[in-house]
Length: 381
Image (tube, rainbow, N blue to C red):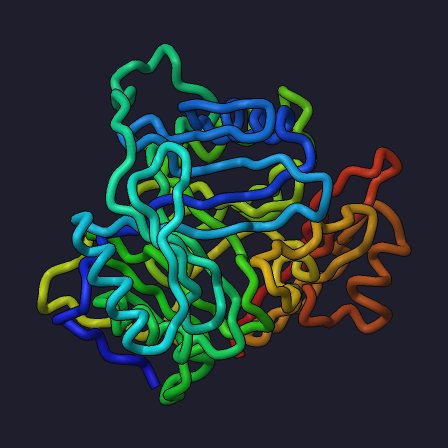
């Protein structure tokens, strides 16, 4: 069942605040996030870089830490309203038997470390050094011109159970989805504290593993600007999925992979929510209206159990992947060609010319992925 929000929470969380990633090549990752995503460098040293969006006055929303080991997500961070909320949070977690501790973190005020209901490492912070917003200095904007941190999305074994921890802290549910109309067990839940649909999202999949984090960009054209810039700078294989439109929330989006395989979403500003009479919107495969180019399904949905919040491995573009859909049939029109070779055509359609797969990602001699669309007639069941 969909959990119910506690409207009198023990302390006041205000929004998704920041994320800490471990990366192998700090210089390359810094270049990706500044030149392609459009973040600004607030501070740094040979081992760490602190970045923020052009609208953000907080010191950082993304921290990159150099590592010689496996790239991972070290921690996700939320902002609380007042410093006293940290004391209330520590008291609350101690009362429910959850370990927590105050730590000293550079460029942050008092910070509380705790693990949430599924074991994700979380930190709560009330304040950071303030920096000037530069949203009005267009001459220094780069790439997608990312405005601000928006949300995290996490794969967990039970989305409803994971969400219940946060609804107990006053998070509200904007959207949820099930498979079929009438189902009661949600496969995905979107939770928020600020006035848009998501601060943290849970999907029912093996985990916990961080699926992606998202930054808001000014508009749809910035999605294409990021792709143009990434290609011009030699980040040729960063596009994983999109541009497209989500079913829940109907936001446009692009998913990119950074040089270490961490997944980041860029999206225009989503719809506003937060009035007391705004209730969760339920979605199922019969009322979700979305579109996108072919996804690399094997890499996009696969996740791993881990003590840390690891990202799934970067997709190998030299393999064939097929996108299967459970509610579309596809019939090839006479004479349709679906690839650059008969081999690809046979893999997609076989001899009968009818399959549920209607896109294929094909490897080229250069080792880059290209999308092969078949000329097909799509029919609803």
